[in-house]
Length: 107
Image (cartoon, rainbow, N blue to C red; front, side):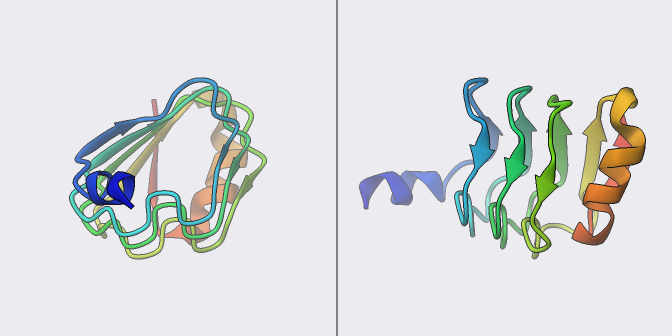
């Protein structure tokens, strides 16, 4: 329970490179979170992973391996949120993130 208390106070998040999946509700309601970096090893972003992160404005994706992003993974984030992703993944990532209410921009 103590971990959750501090997790809610996060403002910036850089997930370790060893992470392969961002699990269900992992960072749900981290309302102070403004920036995240998704590392190169991530292949899946699960349901409600960043749901309710109302101040989340910058999502930087370093992974070129993402195969799945849950429909509501980013529900309730800032309307101004922008996604930065590798140029080589433009077509796939536009498709994966298009209905997640995340504006996309290439890195």
